[in-house]
Image (cartoon, rainbow, N blue to C red; front, top):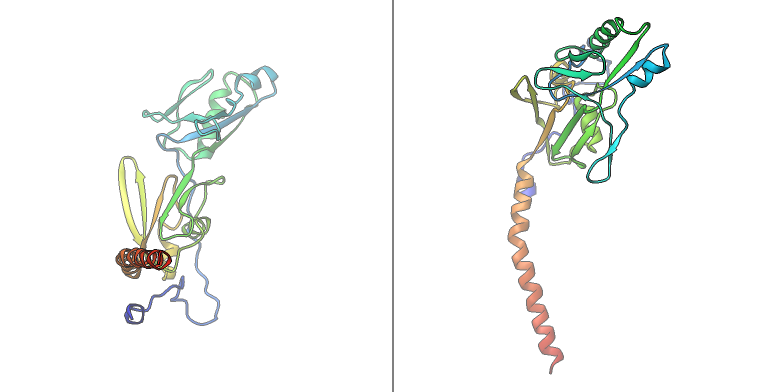
Length: 241
């Protein structure tokens, strides 16, 4: 009865796309992610000198407490810098990866010739929680992921997930921004929150029907337990006769 009286839900992504005609729009340029405090960077340096390559070699991986291997890297400190061999403190906060690579190559050029620097994020992660099939924190290898891809990693929303009211939580420079987006509308593709940043959190809110179901289950459980207990007592009495 409760199900029949509930409001019909729209479970279709981009349901405002009408008909079968082709819809085209300019792809929003997400831009390169910038380096932030507490980011962990993997930095490799290749030169024509074997001795220099050994000096700048990455630190090997170490197992964490739970036995999982985690790659070591250079963490951006509170001053926005890393401490790198030979160069000492190098400020990288606010730069893109390509800008940081150019800066490192220029700085290393004073000591070695033809240095080639490659930098990548080691802790680019997004977290998806709430009404999804597999809530978790996911590592992203290519530093570019959008909202739909993150939901795909989490096994998509359940039928109870409110597609019209997905919350994205983002922290930048000590400021926490919380924005709700509507995945029923194609306009979300033009949102600055469609492409995710490192450490973004996506929360899928449950529909009221989920609360009703959980509440009903909680009320029915004592009755089920009592009924089972009564049957057990009656069975025991019958067997003892």
